[in-house]
Amino acid sequence: VAPVTPAAPAGPVAPVAPAAPAGPVAPVAPVGPVAPIYPPGAYNLTSTFCSTFDFCLDLH
Image 1 (cartoon, rainbow, N blue to C red):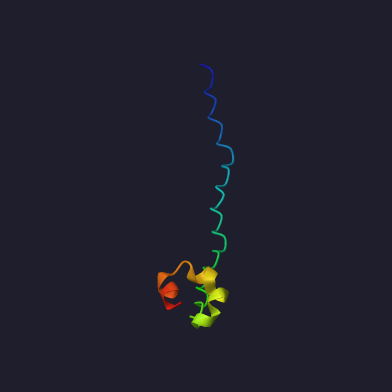
Image 2 (tube, rainbow, N blue to C red):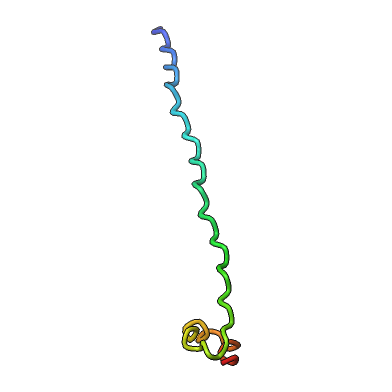
């Protein structure tokens, strides 16, 4: 009877690449300063800002 060929040893196992570490988290920009409420005389300077705030429009 022919000798049984031993099973070939398993080759080197490819190393599992570790998960890439999470990159730096983009910092959350802090809320900027709130536009101050200008006196009615400065309405033109704040028309863009105030156009989105009814409470501000009411002040003018």
